[in-house]
Image 1 (cartoon, one colour):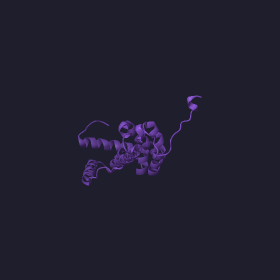
Image 2 (cartoon, helix red, strand yellow; image 1 turned 30 degrees about the vertical axis):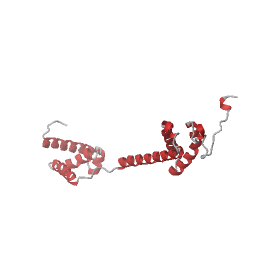
Image 3 (tube, one colour; image 1 turned 90 degrees about the vertical axis):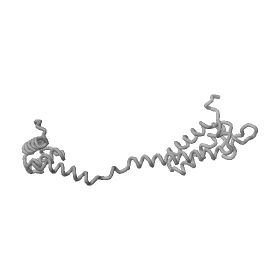
Image 4 (cartoon, helix red, strand yellow; image 1 turned 90 degrees about the horizontal axis):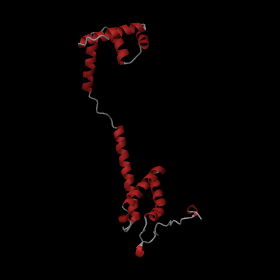
Length: 184
């Protein structure tokens, strides 16, 4: 018979853990404890989370924490209670982390500073004031709103070449007004 053909008897009663030395009633090996408790813990966690994968992950985290401290946990009076308490702590911790992450993602930006918006708008209005209405319209449509010269031409009811000329002259006037004499 190969090792794969062997059947392993797994105790299923929660109230009957394998006895440790001197009949202490405590499980000796972590593997036996895991085999006894994993189905019940998974079922409880599934009822709490209503999500099979999350319940599985929480169960694994709880058993990992117990395994890391098994020398102390196995000596406890109620290691099953400790397991369930650990699992519920893992669940609450995960829920808090998700809540924090959601608040960070959904956090509204800083409150709008109405005065700063007015000041920025005023700067733009003053900069565009010396331009002719056609230049202003061409600069705003092409450079600010990102229209193509064809789209801006349709909006202004002029040819696209006229839009390009008006925008170029408007940019030149803006550079001159701001003290930057570079050619476009």
